[in-house]
Structures are given as structure tokens and as C-alpha cells.
Length: 130
Image (cartoon, rainbow, N blue to C red; front, side):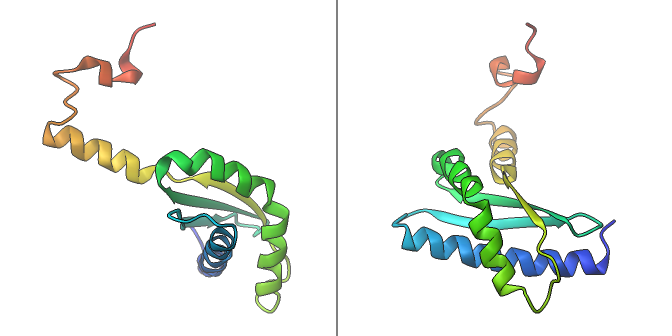
């Protein structure tokens, strides 16, 4: 269970990283690309922050994630400048793609009958026998 301090720091990091990434996307000429920080989880000792990103359109996600990971040091430096009066030490940043929206969309399609796994057993990748 997260402490109040962890939630507070996660909220600060989430807002600042979202602003940093949006500004970098517009300055970098990424028109039509939306990057949002869906969730930030901070460890108990406040040394690591796991940042979950939602990227639209989805096909640009892996490419942008690699670019963000390559620039983690710059992002951490910018975050440290913004939070210098709130945090003594800026946590290490780990970036991940948040695919929960795709997962929810797949469940909705299955429930509506568009991708019915009973009619099409190939949709059940995990249950395929090797």
C-alpha cells in the first residue's frame, strides 16, 4: 500500500513529466502525436519512479518509448530543476508503455461479439498448444 508521501511525489512527478514530454513532442515536430503519463509509481524509499505512458497513435509507441528511454538523463535533469524545492533527490526514472487501454478495448470487442474467441479460437494466443 502506498503512503501519502509516495502518492504526493508520484503526482508531482506525473504532472511535471507530462509537461516535459508534451513540450518536447511539440518542439520536436511530432504533430498528431499524443503522449500522456497515465500513472507513476514510486518505491517506498523514493529512489525509483516507474512512469507509465500512453502514446497515441499506438503504432508510434515502441519507437517513441525508445527515444524517451535514450533521453532519460535529460528528462531527469529537467524534472530535478522543476522539483528542486519539493524533492531533495530526484528518483531514477523507468519508462513503460501503458497498454491497459488496448486491453480494455479487446475485452469490449470480445463482449460485443466482434472478436469472439469461441467462434475464432485463434484469438486465444495464451491457450494455443505448441
